[in-house]
Image 1 (cartoon, rainbow, N blue to C red):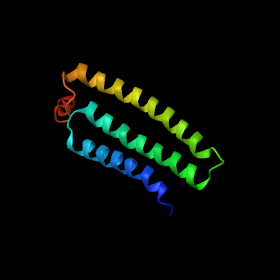
Image 2 (image 1 turned 30 degrees about the vertical axis):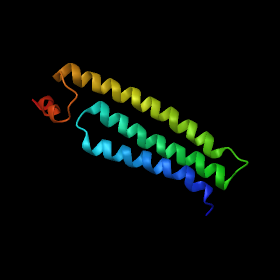
Image 3 (image 1 turned 120 degrees about the vertical axis):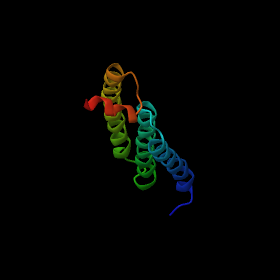
Image 4 (image 1 turned 90 degrees about the horizontal axis):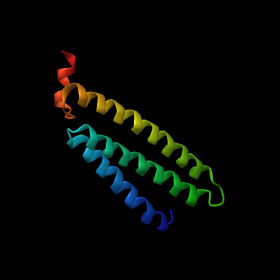
Length: 103
């Protein structure tokens, strides 16, 4: 393995680990969504990195990354709409408070 790829993979791994930590430790839905997006962006970065180093003249990884970004944007829009509706119903975006929706 070429050592140049490590200079690109290390930030991606750090981004992913920060996303996992944020998702596990936060109780706010918006913070959890931001952490999830951080993990998705890290995966997109890996697609671009491996495309550049494994298939230098081709664009499949870049195209796949663009589709993944578009899907993540749509997923974020739906998640924010759901969070807004939950906030209107219970007045909080805290995960613990969502138990009030059962009653």
